Image (cartoon, rainbow, N blue to C red):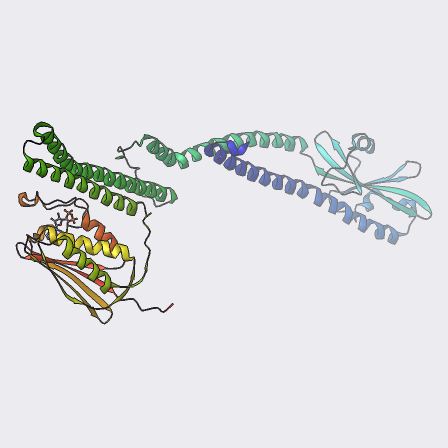
Length: 467
Ligand code: ADP
């Protein structure tokens, strides 16, 4: 049942429980120590007196008149009273006739032996005093005598009882105090958690501006608040990124969609009237549909990388073969440009062949797109003692210095009237960068407006394995 309690109740109960336990434990020890301190000296003085009386009686070796009350006091410890009776019940000696009468002791004897009392002694409670009595048999000149030793344990029983009740009332206040302090403490301790819960409840999608106040004290809750705030920052960052991605993606898809709808609109109105315009519009529609397909494919690729679910299938392979193959295809696809493979050293690398090919294709496609027809595109792959420098250079339009650092950002496209006609979704280089990063490949860019651009990839050679 306790398991289902609120944490604040659990803290209160635990705190109050510990406090009460400690209070009662201390009181119990004090109580026990107190009674022990009363019983023990009383018991000891009787024992000691008894031990002394016996040899003293043996020594005096006189007649019955030896039981003289005055001489009897000699072997006794102060506070101990002795009464001697013969077998007829006649009082032979009494060291203190004013002390409690024997009959009263008999009448007031406790039926039970108190916890701290010696087993060989009797205890009587008379008004407000506790009295001990020990019995001793003695044979004197063949006659049997009974000696009773008395000693007051305490004469303050009523006061002590009152003290007991006072302590109980104090305990009650202690319990109330412990519960109140426990409740206050638990509220104080849990306050930041409560605030965090409220914050978490108020967080709605895209409305995460609130943060928990960080206390100057550097305790565990501050750490929790910091972690919570950091988590919100990260979630908000992720949401912002997603929103930006969706906005940019929609933006990129609007252009081809508009071009398609304009083309279809034209076909609807003019149909086959002008064969040349008809063909031109069908071409536009076809290429824009292809563009949409490319954009969606690239978006899917990046989405998968973001979700960490794009797996690389790495193996050892010869990079020069891939470079040569990609170049062959480029020559076939982009006939308006001049391609030259200046150098293509054999080099064994470890990576995902399909993705390395995709990355090279992105750089080469860009070189074609951003280099006017008739331009030159050169590829050089040099193996320098285990480090390959693979460069893709064009003599195209180049990139302005202020844009060079941004070309790898998602959806970034240089804003230029002249570039509007060149198709692009702004995702190619982000994909190339992801592939490079996941293969430990470094990318350097050199570019000058109107002169051209060179991308240089630095790739580590992998040792050839023969298995
Ligand atoms: P896009 O689909 O627009 O080509 P990328 O991510 O591949 O997207 O490239 C981002 C931008 O970098 C391009 O829009 C272009 O402005 C610039 N860029 C990339 N490669 C070249 C290049 N070889 N020459 C000039 N500009 C380039």
